[in-house]
Length: 348
Image (cartoon, rainbow, N blue to C red; front, side, top):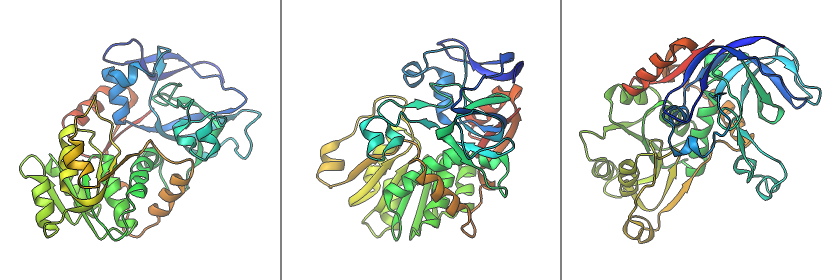
């Protein structure tokens, strides 16, 4: 396919992004498909790219480039080395592009490949009408799911990976941050058999959505001491597991203090910079297990997500915050900055 398309580009190593109408339609390789984009959600990573922090500066080398990676659409071209897929197939996209040659790929950890490329970050993405998708990253989208819901599955997978790491079944779990991923984490904790889910956030409206997703208790961290409240709710012992979606240093410190001894802490959200922790008092002496997750396991976490979507009572609808045209990208960003709950989705 030839011609031009509309899209949002990171054009220079400085804050901002540009809506353009003259971007060449991507020419796919033999190992890619061309996806007609139907919906792409805005992620915290996209904000890092827009604001041009260290995360973006260390990864985005070829500008201008279309970014955006939480997406869904339909295949309109198929490279000759791509098997099992055809024009018209509805798909979502895994962000990780592994080399399949390094040590980590060889032991089944393709999601933390030592030579990792990232769809929509190091490679062209989906804030546009069309996007080139590597064959390793194609995920079939169930017919029952809308494209808008399909655009949220990549983010859901990151949260579900955190739930898997925390092994939440039968546990009291603290979820810090009730943005889109946090809301999906709350629902996934319920689907994975958590005994009790406590959610915290600064915004009451987000906490109300957390209740809709299955939170047993909610805590406004701007008005209450989260660690003290969690200890009170758990008879003084603390939560069994804590999953942080915020990446905020103070929230991480508070989450650690809210854990019982020998609890597990899982970081999902990306901090903006270095985070100082009291390793001695908050981790070592209390035998806290601290771990992080990087996206989703390929493609096991996607399979877990599909099972969760079939769980009675689980719905992605409360997670959709707003749907915007590509050219209204800045309006969608403003909604995120103003704390509007849910995922903001762009449609071409």
